[in-house]
Length: 440
Image 1: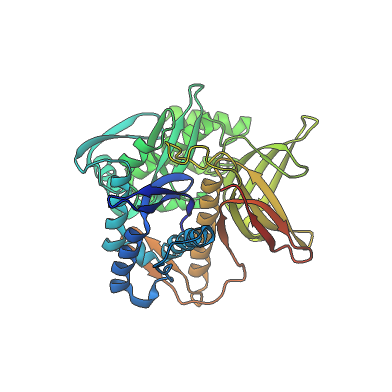
Image 2: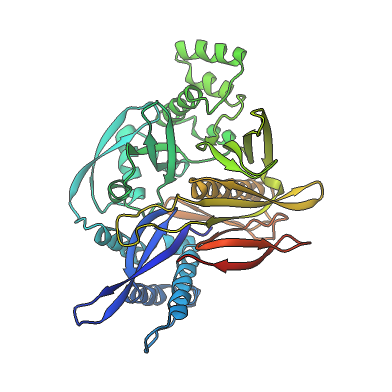
């Protein structure tokens, strides 16, 4: 599935010959990823084309005359679409020409040179381990180094990921984003400009039953046991009083296997909880706490009369979703490095035999979208195992699995719509209608 790349802004910069060039600010999952020129992306596209041929999406053409404002905006949109589409091919994501270019532009953007460095990786129990890496090491490489240090089986790496996590003073934590395999954790951490931000190791699957795949590896069991304890302590997982007493007894006995078996019966076990946000259901402006996992979006909504209501959206009834950036960057030439001022995620949901749009306003919209994509991916893998006539391609660490393909009955679709301030929903079929761009 496509990555959440966007180019919400560009700046005109003077060049050495007295002319001017355009520098594009590329964001990934709402955080500044790099700044690049068109010429750099053009050369990269040529390199990719020599390897992958016509599999590449179309690249915006060169202009040999001065661009008008509308032409410049069109090119920016086209470059954004190119970055989103080129990441849809898992083989391309794993290629050296793809990874080497993105490593270079990340380092150049933040003026970081390749050198040896120490990086603290925080575990779910709050402790950290220090690993020796290069500043140019990707998240995939750093995860391999971490796994070697803690004894995690290499074939289980795909069940875990590195995340940027903000540890708040009151003891809460906020998962900000999952680092993509080609991201540089050392660079991402230093460029995030978020207070008390750390790189953390967490499991990366939304189906709690997948715990069973890890039970033969002691290091993997330790990790998911630590995360289960943390989730219960942070009240992300919500055991009943009877379950809590049994879990505490198993914890005292250090019986991790039975603890995890019982944990899988706990409400919201294995879910990722987002920070408090707002939504438009059952009426506009309601406060909400979202928990995502096990093929559902669980919302605890606070109504205007301060009463709460639990609402569950099943992923099997979600047709599509999109993330929209509603605001503007206040300081385009300065250190403005996040897009979390005004983000929304809206999804189309089947309710009482008709499709309806629901909107969630959250600075973690990109993370929520990543979770939804993960649930779709896991569902399709499960369907493929049950039905060999289906065809999907599932990327894993260093390889891909292919299955015979047939169309799934559920159409899943996600998109990112930047610089959009007004969205009009067409009546009848609830598809996107008129889209107007303002502000940038």
